Structures are given as structure tokens and as C-alpha cells.
Image 1 (cartoon, rainbow, N blue to C red):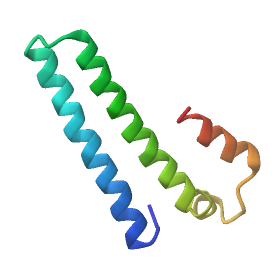
Image 2 (image 1 turned 45 degrees about the horizontal axis):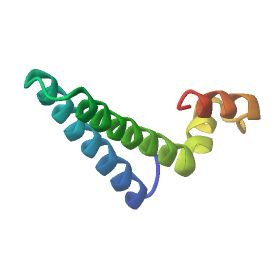
Image 3 (image 1 turned 120 degrees about the vertical axis):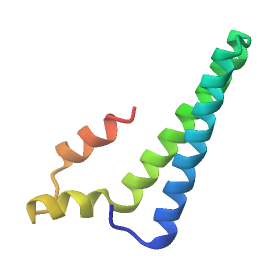
Length: 86
């Protein structure tokens, strides 16, 4: 992933937060916590991952695709990658 240091730091922070939240979900399940609490925390993990993915797309998807082909990416490819997060 090529981007400026600020964007990379933001993505890494979001992924680390999601990693911590996922660890919390696992611990909650192991501890037999209430289903409602588990689902709420799992939704937070999902949002954190979505935000990280959208940040990656927003900052450098075109560059990433261009590096693979040396051509500008077509809209169909961009749309397909974007929708993988939906």
C-alpha cells in the first residue's frame, strides 16, 4: 500500500482498533456474555474494518491498480473492488 504517512497511520490505527475489538468479542463469547453485547461489539468491529477499507480506497486505490497494469483503472474494476466492502 503506497500512500502518505498520515493515511497509512490512520489505516493501521483503525485496523489495530478492530483487532482489539475482535479480541474483545472472542473473550465475550468465551465468558458467556449476553448475545446483545456480543453483537453490538461485533458491529463495532465490522464498522472499524469498513472504515479502514474505505480509507484505503479513498487514498490510493487508483495508484494500486495503476501499478499492476501501468494503465489507468477502468470504472468496472474500481466499482467491483469498492463493492467487495459493501
